Length: 245
Length: 234
Image (tube, each protein chain N blue to C red):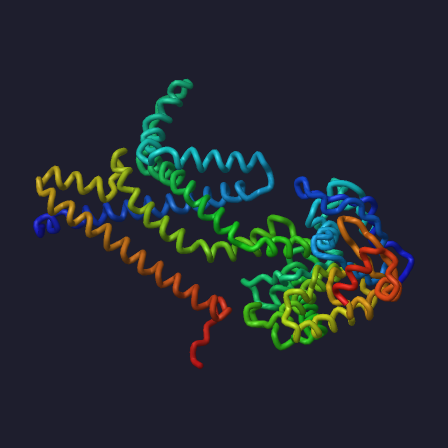
């Protein structure tokens, strides 16, 4: 983790109609930092994450990623997104393509790599997530854990410097959670800047540099895993942790 | 009946050929029109949404025969009133335009439903990788949507084939028109229309059968999770 600020969020607001999901979010995320976002459902964790790569358009505030104000009309959001990988709860692999094609699509279509470079890089990534043998398989033929590992490989194919994880293990059978978390731990170890929305407290304790507790559209409390999990200060954090730990 | 077949079989077959030509031409243009208006309807621009909706509603609200008369008789008059020399579109062109516009509106609805049936997460995943909206549509959404749409498209194909008979009113020499000529010449209405009916039926039933086969093939591929390659020897 370095002192360079990768993501700067100031007074972020987001409404869905009349519902204020994010009321005012302020956070700086540093290069190489692993930030785990926890909180009750409906607290705005996923919305916050989706605002960071503009899958949701914010209604107020500033988000600066690597020096680019993503709400600036002159910024090419596609270019910014190339640097931000995202992993979804429901994998969202492309069912009409096999595994290696899933991984190759973005690097080839954005002209970042030639077909053969992308294939080579794709195979390397599959090896990294332990799924080399599944390159030609279609998503429907994979288990949930395998799908999520492919999804991580696909996001890494664009060589991003930031990875966003939106409840990556919530849709998995319990016995498959471990394999996905292992891949994520290795990524963290390799110095990736990560923002992870999850309910896996074990992962948060072990891997997070900082845990952020959100509720009701605000960040209620943040700190190291020890501070948050062992000595929470805020009433709401304590009552949430009592329920999940 | 045999006498009709003897003296008119080549003409009937040629007329069936005209019917098929008109159908295929209309369908090609209808697919293009349908795709364009469907993309307008699913886009995030209010203006494009409105244009798409107006087109679909307007065309679906007008009977094909009225549309055909409008294009064949009405449009040339409009040109004349605007001071251009009088001209008339040949029946094939006018028929193709009318049929393509009509079928295009229905195709737009089929395409729209197909696109909307694809999980939103697909577009989000594609966009999150840095792909543009257009590339995501082309490489991720449309190939999946198309598969869903194939049965409806073939169904629309059959409807359009039958609708060509309406264009006999503007004098296009398709099968129904030929039937009218033959019935008029021979006074053998029963036999003539039976033959014409059977000819339509043969073409349409074989199309439906082909459609069923394609549908079944897609289902098998889906359950095996392997488009194109199939291994059934287990």
